[in-house]
Image (cartoon, rainbow, N blue to C red; front, side, top):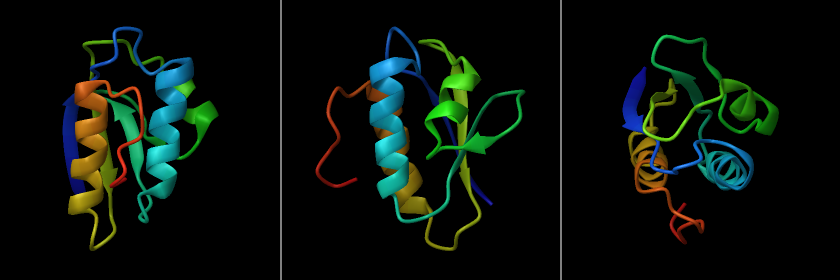
Length: 93
């Protein structure tokens, strides 16, 4: 299992627009990814309801994970998106 611990860079956390951006990026990642709060249960990162249900706030740490063999690059891209609080999907998602 590959994991990335990352601090949520969006001030409003993973809510509404940021969650939508994150879910689209996770869906496009090409590997199954889960996300959880540091001490929480993982949810499918490509599920809008799952991500919103986390209630992850800005500045809070979340954990991205995948069991796929080629997950390193995908998790790196998602971690960058979350930590920098990007407002647009990078072209290389």
